[in-house]
Structure formats: C-alpha cells, structure tokens
Length: 88
Image 1 (spheres, one colour):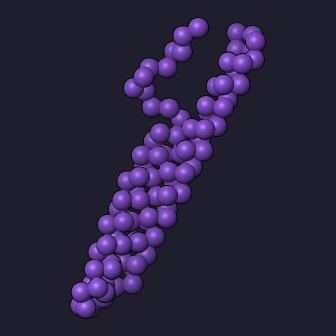
Image 2 (cartoon, rainbow, N blue to C red):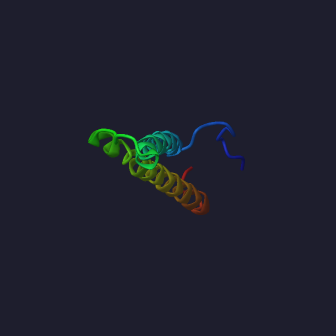
Image 3 (cartoon, rainbow, N blue to C red):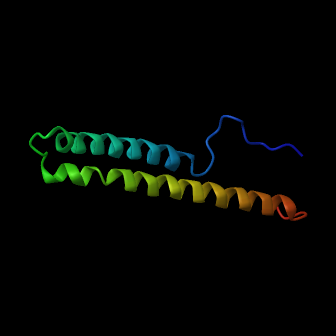
C-alpha cells in the first residue's frame, strides 16, 4: 500500500517548526545586538531590547511544539497503519 503523502508536502507541525526557527534567529540577532554595547564599553541599549532577547526562548518553545505535533501525527499514522481495517 502506497502512502498518499507527496514528498514535498508540509506535514503537521512543519509550519510551527519553521516559525520557531525564524523567531529563534530573530532573538539570537537581538541578543547579539544587545550584548555588543556591553562588550564594547558603549552606552547600553534600552531595557526593552533585553526583552527581545527572550525571543530565542519563545522560538525554541514554538519549534519544540511543532516537533511534538509532528511526532504525535507520526505515531497516529503508524497506529492507524498497524490496526487492520481501522481506516477502511
């Protein structure tokens, strides 16, 4: 029995993973921009910039949720394939 999923189609959780990676890298860039003045001895940036650094953690959590959703869908698909006659 062939799987009907196209090889380039997005599975469950793929968009969450991509969004999480993007948010993580924005947070990483904000962290670099925030820490640079501290290392260079110049005037520190405003406090809200330190809050933008927390986007790294938010992106990590979003990507983790996408991975968990993808794993759950894979387990569900495997369980349905293993059950005889369950999806017919």
